[in-house]
Length: 484
Image (cartoon, rainbow, N blue to C red):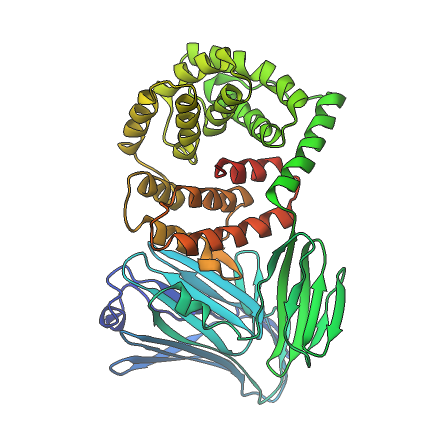
């Protein structure tokens, strides 16, 4: 796809906005193909750009199609407007056009809900940039944010436009104020309804119970549900999350795991090599963490009976345990004062490596040793070693910053959680990564000014996760890793 608009790292006006040399960008991507009376062709766009002090306009032409993008940015404002017009005498069918959002070293968050939308870039330095949809439509399709659906027909003489307007915000509270005023919390627990205070709107909610009243509409359901709301503002597609509590989800997952243990399903080939064995043990340990939390003691005993000696063997052979193996061993020490688990745990601590969740797991180990009246020095030493080793991901960096008391760490985590907004990070994360971000909220200090906002945002993400996979032991184990 061709880019017709961006706020890029070489832009002088990006520098003028105080974004620096590695500026984030929002790009509008043109269709690559068109279908008209001539047949189907790949589009070749010819460009002409004009600029002034704070605005850049680019015109692209390909046959009867004319695309224009206008970009305005200053130290406080950011506007992006793009259009495609058909100046010919015949209708033209276009391939997909989309947005490409690059947060550079920061974090992007996108809510694409039809006639409502928000693009947020947390640049990890001094500010959060947010652009609200003012014209056009945005929809999410995997990692793509689509503003022109594939197959859309542009009639002769017609134009399609997308416009986003916003700027620099003081924080996520200001970003939230850019959402539609009528938008309710979209993730709820148990039997709570989503209360839509729009008495004149049309609501289509497949699989949900809908009760209309004089002041609005109450929507009830289970799991994730897609709801369409139509009003004077257009049509907005909402993803509602009706989630069980974490305790309810862990209990249901533990019942499922216990049944699987009873059925003794045939497993895959045994893991080979120390890394393969460590990964296999960590998968087993995630199940044990869920069973421990649900107090499913008989099933937990069965899993622990095989896990503990295997961990001891792995450590003796020079292998390294993963975060859930360490957390599960600590859980066994606390649950039934298992001395074999304690010995395996103490033997494993000198070899732990910097990987996602290890600092979280070590806080559990610390609590287990403290509860026994033992010196937690091995945990302090392990944390000191981890703090000197490189990390590979943004969330690992946040985890390290939280453990070392970085005053900016909670704000970075708030950005990773989307500040409590609906939508998704860009690029999208796997469910376990989202659960990892939620678990990191437990490391935020009680007196951190960003703490309440982080906890609230983490709860909303957790609700979406448990609504989507209420018995997913891998995701639940991550959520439980953050429980205290």
